[in-house]
Image 1 (cartoon, rainbow, N blue to C red):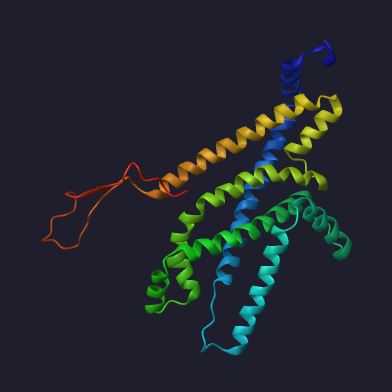
Image 2: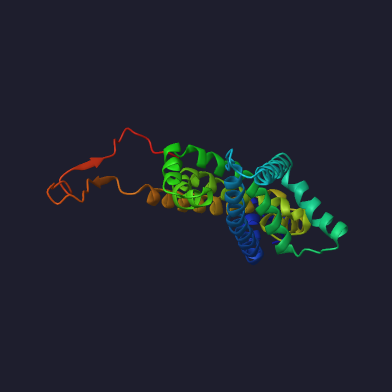
Length: 268
C-alpha cells in the first residue's frame, strides 16, 4: 500500500516507524541544546543580575563608581537588545555575522548553544535581579554588619534564598528553550523541527508529520515540567517542623510541631 492510499492514522504510524531514528536524534539534539543553554544562560543571568544590584557607596573610589556605572549601562543594553528582538533574527545575525565580520566559522553546536545561552541570559538577568530584591533587606544588612562584601553577601546569603524564588522561572525558561530551539533550523541545526521539515518535505504529509512532532514536543516539555515541580517540592522542605533549641533545660524539640495550613497556597 502506498502512502497516498493510507488513512491519517496509518500515515502517522508509518512516519513514526520509518523515521523513528531521525525523530529520536532530533529530539535528543533539542534536549541537549535546551539543557546546556539553560544552564549557561542561568550562569550569565546570575552574573548580570549580581552586577546590576551593586550600589556604590559614597566613600568608594570615583574610578570604581564610573566603572560600575559603565558596566550597568552595557549590561542593560545587552538585556534590552536580546529581550526586544526575535531569537530567529539573533541566530541569523550571530551565525552569519560572526563569519562575515570576524572570519570565525561557528559549528552547529557552538552557534546553537551560544545563541540560546545569551538569549536565556538576558531573560534570567531580570529574573535574578527580581529574586535578589525579593529577599528581605535585613539579610543584606546583617551580612554587611559582619564584614561581608557584596559578592560574599550574594553568594552565601542572598542567592541561596533567591534561588527558591526564581526556580519556577528557571524551569519556565527550560520549557521555552525546548520549543524555541525550533528557530535554529534557520542556521541548519538538525533538531526536532528541522527533522519535521525534512520528513514532511520528503513525503508531502505535513499534517501527519506535524502531529507526530507535536506529540514528541509535548512529551519532552511535560516530562521536564513534572521533574521541575518535583525539584521545587524538595526545595520547599518538609510539611511540618520540629521546634529545635540548644537550651538543654527546655524540652521543646519533638513536642511542638507546626503544620502548614492546607488552605494556604504554595509560592510558585
